[in-house]
Length: 165
Image 1 (cartoon, rainbow, N blue to C red):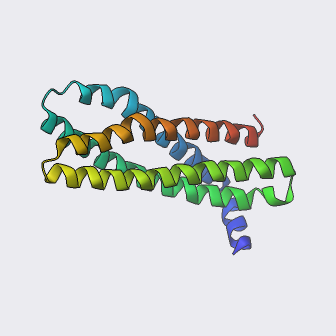
Image 2 (cartoon, rainbow, N blue to C red):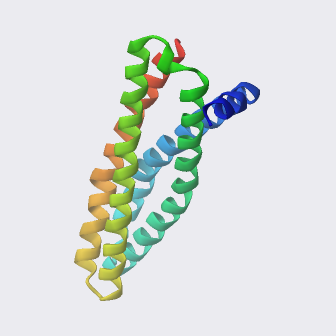
């Protein structure tokens, strides 16, 4: 299996690195736009029911967007980790690879938690509990998304260090 990954990476190195960089950029950029652009617009909606409904729609669309982006990012990461041979190279770089993996794993679990909070918000909304639904949405938009943004930014910086730039 390892040999196959190395061969595929050797044949498609530039494409895999491009997909990795683009997916990380889309993920971090999407988090930034959601928090800095979309959230303030949603806050300006006066009607609680309408605000919660539009927030739920936004979070659903973001979830649909982020799932394939995360899958491409993870797949490209596996190819790069095996293909670039970090395991057999500089131990410091190998530690950085594992640090990035830990950060992205935390980000993935944070997204899974966001799905749980989204489902809670959607259930509360369908039952007419707009305050509870909004509390779940506020947790996602004000805390979980900025946390993922900062962690993704740190992981990107570590990636730059790994590439030697």
